[in-house]
Length: 125
Image 1: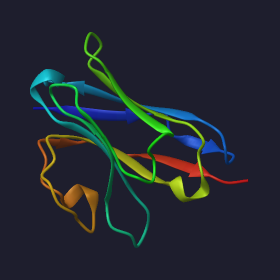
Image 2 (image 1 turned 90 degrees about the vertical axis):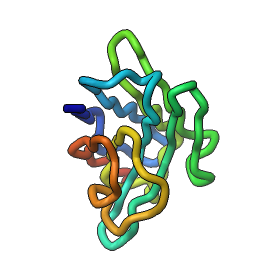
Image 3 (image 1 turned 180 degrees about the vertical axis):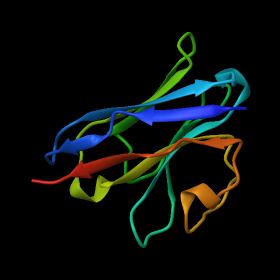
Image 4 (image 1 turned 60 degrees about the vertical axis):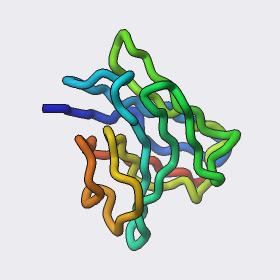
């Protein structure tokens, strides 16, 4: 069973940085599409960034130039480096393995091989 565990969330001031980690087990990144999503109360689940099994990166327009997704295949960890954080980046961030395309009112309702438990990111002055 694929398991994903996020860490690295927290509270920062606008302009600050955080690095989220998604530690994966029972999965090979080269064989999977891995993604970061985020959700705020009352809003739909949004795809933030992803990396395909062959290393192709995708970023939502709202985070391009500020966020970077990467993977450490030796440690089986996916990262989301978030720089220049804005209050509108405040959300619960989830990592997912092989998520289905499309949207969902709740991230955990979007079909995927596995979801992490989520980590809270709060950007506030």
